[in-house]
Amino acid sequence: MAVKAKDIISLLSLYAHRGCGSEEEMYAREELLAILEGEPGVTVKEEGFYAPSSYLPFFWIIFSGVILGILITPYSPLVSLILTLCLSGSFLLFMDWRYSPLIQVTEHKITANLVATKTTGYPLDPLIILMAHLDSAPASFAYRKEQISFFKITLYCTAVIMIFSSAFPLMHFGNYFIPDYVRFMYSTILFLIIFITSIDYWRYGYTPGANDNLSGVTAATTIARRCFRDMPENAEVRLVITSAEEAGMLGAKQYLGLHDEELMSRPTYVLNIDSVGAGKLCYVSHSGTFSETHYKGPVIETAFRLSRDHDKFSHIRSMKHHVGDFDTIWFMRAGIPSLTLAAYDEEGAMPHIHTPEDTVKQLDHALIEEAIDYGEAIVRRLAIKEMT
Image (tube, rainbow, N blue to C red; front, side, top):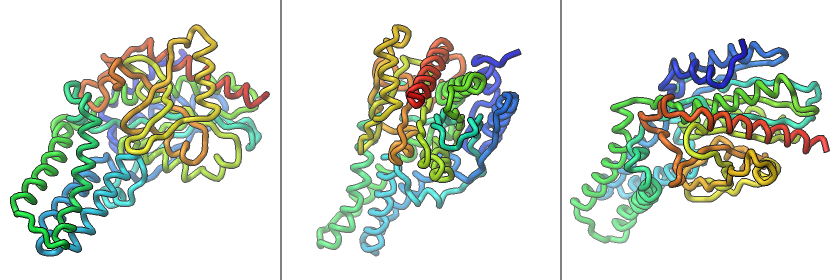
């Protein structure tokens, strides 16, 4: 009996709380591998790498270091300045979804990207990559329903607080007196921020990860299996299920770094699917936190034309993702045309993500099927575009 989208959801939902490098993530990946190995002519492999289990250990190093830098200002202002500048810079890099070398200091676990492909036999044929991340996020207080509307302003305020931590050693160098209680109050604020950020993870662990991103994995896998059985002529379709997305999209970065020579030598397009299980389906035109990325190129143009020209997809619109980014960001920065499909509620938020409420019961199966049909149409239209 053919494995359908709802069957993939039912199967993978047995492995909730799929933190990067966890047993649950490994078992879920093995289930996907078994499904994909049943496809005729499809080559499936795992590409292992080491990655942090989440962003939280990285944040604790940053916040603890900045607090230490503030407290030692009267005794070692130079060390304080170096600590606050370097660690604040690392925080800003990470929150703008850029690579911060400091993340390598945290404990790493073995994980893997799952790659399935059915080649055309011609290595220079166009390559269309379907992508989705498998790992679940740590539960976060900031994503609670009553808090999510304040998420953007909270993040910006935290960034300002981090930046101004360097003012303490600078004022000391300028012989400006800062009372001890001011330093202690500032340090307490930073401690409360990281404590509140972590509290839901300590209570609940990793989220069930249904919308984020069991929905995307199901959609991308289903599209890939359809294309493997009826390949777009003269185009290779490849499925890449990444890990470590919730640790800074490191799985996608790892994949690009490992295959950059191949991807740059042929026409390559990336369609990422993330959190399409609740809300209204959209394609992301802009993303970023401190610097904005404008997605452009053949993939988003294809999505736009499908929405414009087909009644079935006429309600699907572009969306600006105001805070954060997706696995596609590394490819877009490398000059590879990319696009993410995601679903949003009326307030522009992704429902249930990063919370304990992100369960299978909350999934809109019709919406996932819509994402599958829309994504498949984009892939096939891109293949036709390359032929002509």
